[in-house]
Image (cartoon, rainbow, N blue to C red; front, side, top):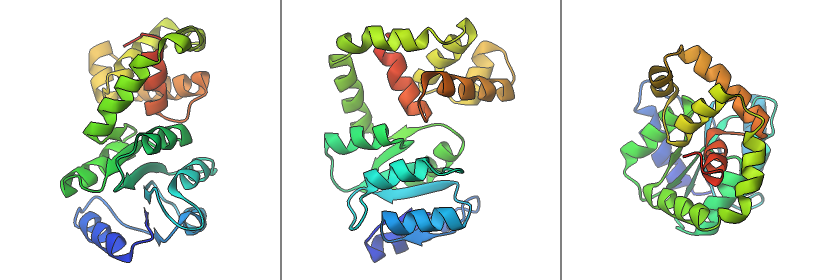
Length: 211
């Protein structure tokens, strides 16, 4: 699903994504309100959501989409390279954050990456997120470690690899386990840490000094 108040942007993204045989654009919306209606009416696996929109902005839309009974994975898109958008989007549950000036092929790749259960950030955004979390990690380290204490040793191993950005296949190879077992561990990790996606789990692991 493509969510953007600019008709030309929606058309361009639709043409781009429909050009990939593995991707089907099943819905479009002009704002967060329409996005919720569309996501409720049909099965949406991944939503590309603009940050700045009328009626309901993208950050609010992300949180509401992620709260649906069958939530889609969400990638936020924006032309504005502002730190607060990155952090707010991730806090709301976004699985990816991209600037619209990124190479079009990277948008296609992001849809595949996020649909597979991983996360993707625009390189500039990723660098600033890491720097900011490292700079402010000390006050949160104890709290983060307390949450990680809920995990088994094996789940901590999985989380360590997850925090490095490894895919489920990478983790399975590194830890000598089935990919289905990795998926089960990741699900339990997210539930135990009370986070909604891999990005938030990875940030929590960094707070705790696990990676």
